[in-house]
Image (cartoon, rainbow, N blue to C red; front, top):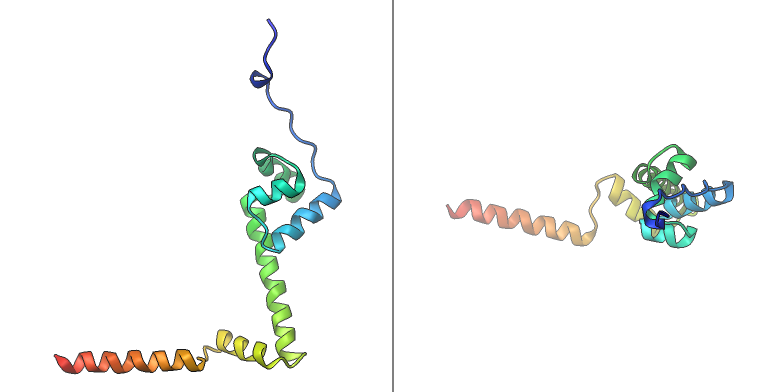
Length: 126
């Protein structure tokens, strides 16, 4: 009796070559890291991603995504810093100061004052 194809163990896919590894890495650093996107671009099955990532990066798929997304965030922050400081982009400088120096913009400042006033009014009512 001949075995059916579904009963036979599946053959492991061929590991990615260096060009394919760079392509996957670039996708992940640019926040295109959901399994469906990677599979669509790379032409592989979702079931094979863990194996392929382990072979390429020494990490499982989730670990690889986390690592390369953090790398992408760092690259983005460096570009943001360069735009703010080197290129003297006032908008980028303002946003970066708000984020890293805990400075508030005009809208946030008004909201904070309004919350403080409301809290004082509630305290005095009792």
